[in-house]
Length: 396
Image (cartoon, rainbow, N blue to C red; front, side, top):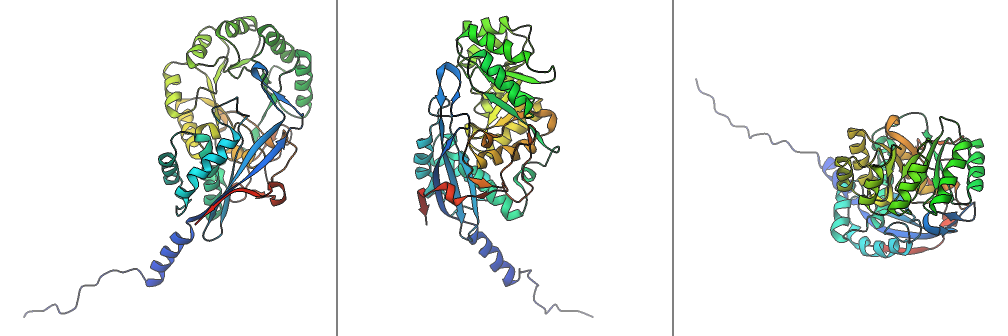
C-alpha cells in the first residue's frame, strides 16, 4: 500500500492585523519635532559664589522637548553653571540642538542607545548639548511603558534620597551660620564652597565643622580653585578634622598629588567626565568617591553606565547635575533613587535653590530628603506659562 502527499506545506504567517499594528506603532513612535525653551532661574539666595571669585545670580536653563508622531512628548533640562565652570555654556546648548535636531527626526525615542549613537555621529563632543535630548527620551520611554524612569534605570532603592546643601562662598562665620540654618531644615550633608584664599578656606572648614554633629558629612569642594601648594597647605592644616576634600586643583595630575599627601576621603568631580577618565583614576587609586553630573557625561544613559561601573567596582557617588530647576531635579532623583543606597553618597535638590518652578510633580525636599516620582516617565507636567515661547522648533 502506498500514500501520496497531496496537501501543500503550511507556512506560518502573522495575521494582517498584527503586522499592521507593528508597522503603525513603529511609525507613530518616531520623533517628529525637537523644540526648546530658554528659562531664567533666579536664585533664592540672590547670589551663588564658588572658587576663584566666580559667581552667578540667575541660571540660564534650556528646557528640551521631544515630540513623537503620536503626540507623546518628553522633556529634559540642561543648565550649565555659567560659562566658567565646565566646558559648557547655555547658548551652546541651543546652538548644538540646532545642529542635532534634523538628525533626530524619524528616530524612535525608545531606542535610546541608538539615539545617542546618532547624536555622537552628528556632533562630536559637546556631551552637555545631548543631555536634554537623552533625558527627554527616557521620559518618553517611561510614559510609553507606564513606568517611572527610576524603575527603568534599575529599580527603586530605599524610601528616600539623602540630600546635601551647597554653601555659597562667604566669610567663614557666615558660612558656618548658613550651615547651621540648613541643618535646622533637615540637611545632614553639606558641600562647602572653598577654592579661594588658602588661609580663609582653612577658617571656613574649621568654623563650619564646629556647628555639625559627628555623624554629619562635610565636603570641602574647591571646584579646581587651589594651586597645588595651596591645596597641600589646606589639607595639612585641617588634618585633624572630619572632612572630605573634593577636586582641589584643575588638572588630574595635581589632584593625584594632593590625594597622595592626605588621609582625608577624596572626591573627584570635574576630571571625571567619561568612563575612560574613571578607569584611569581607579587604576591610579586617585579617589575614594566620584561626583557624577548628568549633563557633564551627556545624559542619563551615559551616567547610568558609569554609575553601574562605580557600583561594580565599589565607589560611592554624588549623583547630580551642573544645575537646573524642576526637570533637572526630577532626572537627578530618578538616577539617585535607582542607585543602591550604600553607593549613594549624596544628591541634591536644585529646584529648592531657585525661585521659578517650571513643572508640577517635581521632587520636593522634606527634611533634607527627596523621592523620585512614582508616576510614568519623569513624573512631571511642565508649566507652559513658565516656559515662555520656543526658542528652537524643528519638525518634519
